[in-house]
Image (tube, rainbow, N blue to C red; front, side, top):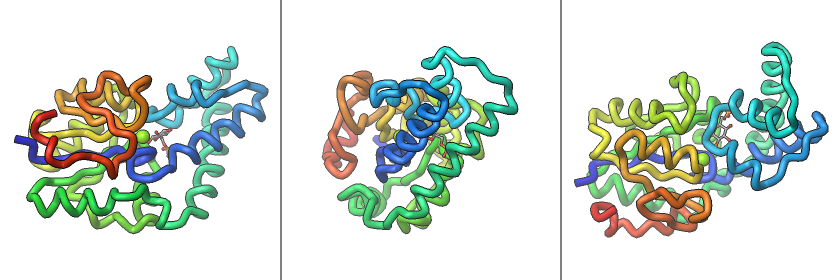
Length: 214
Ligand code: BG6
Ligand code: MG
């Protein structure tokens, strides 16, 4: 019996994955690196620093730690500028209804994001009070596909992994959920999320009646 749903944030609850992409693309352009939407799939779900390292690998460049810190900070400032201009209506359709529905069924709901900006984002879209537990990139040391973020969310809820279902839009996130010993609903395309137990095009489309047969 499933007792909790754990949600990734960027690309699952709100379209901030697009802002991460725009900011990374701008940085890649400055560095003279061609960075495609397909390349961007590798960045989804992974930490800021690991994302930068992947872009540098794509461009065949190496850099010292200090320069990497400066570039990551620059990208983050652009991302934060996009996010601050965001409207609460940018939350994906049906997400608030789904969160409410799960809670009225007596399930716990948690947020588990790699982002250090997660709390800012959920405040801006006015859902900061909708979660029984929140785990973000400021509380973890290992990036997805490591299961740390999901295991921490389950433990904050007082539950074991097999009680939990994760909602994820990233290949690394689906792997992290499965590595945690949890079920996973992939949100997006089967091309990236093929390992998930179920794939839906949008979070709001989740058929709640299937929760216990994943
Ligand atoms: C994840 C995103 O949620 O957070 C990644 O999918 C992002 O694209 C990562 O790099 C870290 O985010 P932040 O806000 O800490 O740079
Ligand atoms: Mg995501």
